[in-house]
Figure 1 (cartoon, rainbow, N blue to C red):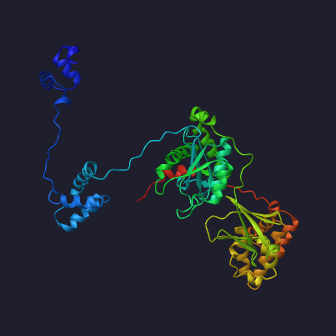
Figure 2 (cartoon, one colour; figure 1 turned 30 degrees about the vertical axis):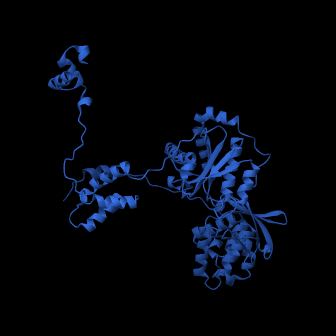
Figure 3 (cartoon, one colour; figure 1 turned 135 degrees about the vertical axis):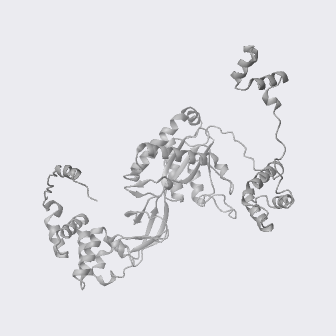
Length: 482
């Protein structure tokens, strides 16, 4: 600046410094950064000088010790010597020791990725995003699949880290991709990776899945999630993108899993548009898909108990009482299970989440329950025999109005729902409750026989009188009295 302006005062003003300061640097012939003295002296005595040897020894023996723990130790050993405000001084001292004398830290080595060589997958929870279905919280996971070279990604909604979720999610990804990479890496999922004591590296079902698609299986080391770093990083970025997309949508509520899945698919498509060039490089070297998909279910064979129920994965499901004593084949899928008997599917039941739960269909047991009404009061799964709130209201009302025969009356109404139509029976119950009429089997059966009770309900006109706006004027002009 001084060379261009040839005027010291102008150059100093342009540099934002005093003219005397500018003259000093001109005479020295050095820049301000060249004459700056490195601050290497203490402004106050080191309060930990006398105990640093003790602290250092503990750090050398246990490098994982935190400054807060050591500071609490010093306060106990030397009461009144160290106030809480000195903690930051100890933290800085320990930080310098770790950087200059402490143990070496783990080094992460960046890896070269090659087209079509590796894909990674993992499960991640999405419940924290506050997504709801028809207003109810939707607890779920995402099976996340990523090509490490192009970062092309896709995913499927699932409910647990089961083999069915892994198989369904991976096959959905491969068929959407339209080709198969060389290797597949996952973390140490118990449904895919055996324990170290097992001679086989992978479980039999996972090996069969890999063989079907001609994939080489890889797994990360225990406690080393960074080895699956590409998909782990995509977890974070995808959740952030999904959160932003939900904000733009204006709602986190969806009518069904199908609508939510379509929303996720659209988001994946938007994210993948920026990866087309590298993705095309991958497509050129990927190998082709097999002729068909592999069945994504777990097969079981169970016996139907005397209570007309089966036990599958620690949960109880009802089946038709005709199957009592028979052995049936179960095909357990990600969101439902199928009951097969004599090479024929006889039931398709939504799958329960978790353990020690039950799903009883009253149609399976009602024929015999009406013959044994005394069993209803203490039936273990009685709550499942109220198809809706109106059925429960009818039961409670019968209990008050007909205490000697309310079980029989309610079971006959439930039997009618199984024979005729649950919706018609519910409409009849609703009509009787709204009209204030007694609820009984005869009354419900009569309404069901006559047709839809809701269509015969007279529509009442609601009259709202006009509001005199002058009342507000008189109120405003009314004298306010204390």
